[in-house]
Length: 116
Image (tube, rainbow, N blue to C red; front, side, top):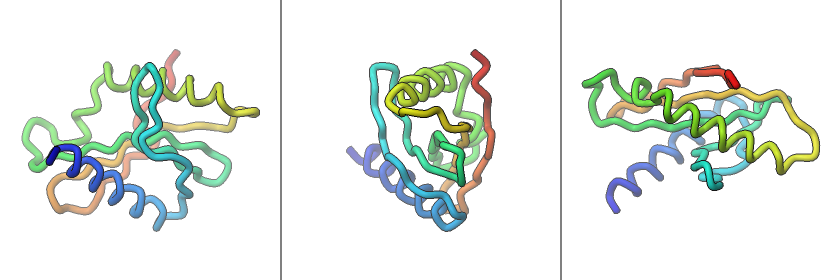
């Protein structure tokens, strides 16, 4: 329960941070059979799929390092499923917002690509 509250808080913090940088919220915690996308936002014409990672400390590479290849593949599959719900396909990118402790969010644009 506490872990889920911390995750929700981190996602809200990331969403507010990104909105302050001009992104518009589209969806939060979008789920399908492939997994969940924490945040989907719009940056101009680009649809942005965002993974939010929270770590209390920076040991073991910190929050950003926890977005493994396996997690990337799940996010890509979920994003592909999401895109089937749209009439037209927008340009897309995959970002990560890494939050370590109470530090400012670390926004990693184009954190990884859809490599097929």
